[in-house]
Length: 82
Figure 1 (cartoon, one colour):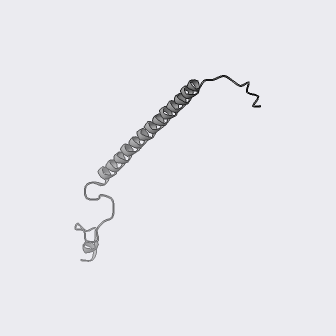
Figure 2: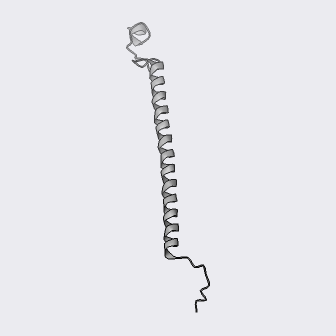
Figure 3: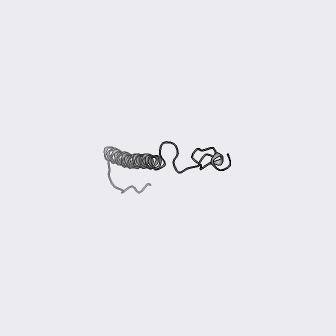
């Protein structure tokens, strides 16, 4: 007493549809992964460029960062009080 009058789809049709759906999911996941990897690579490049430009601005020895108290040339402690 199921009252079955539903659609008459064969198991092969159901399997093919499930396979197509699985393939579509895999393709979507691959595309998303590629987008994430591209964004990560761009971010790595941007960070590398930022570090390079910061290093170039400061020079090899630190540039405009902290100055030593014992710096020669009159700028440090020894130049003022030494």
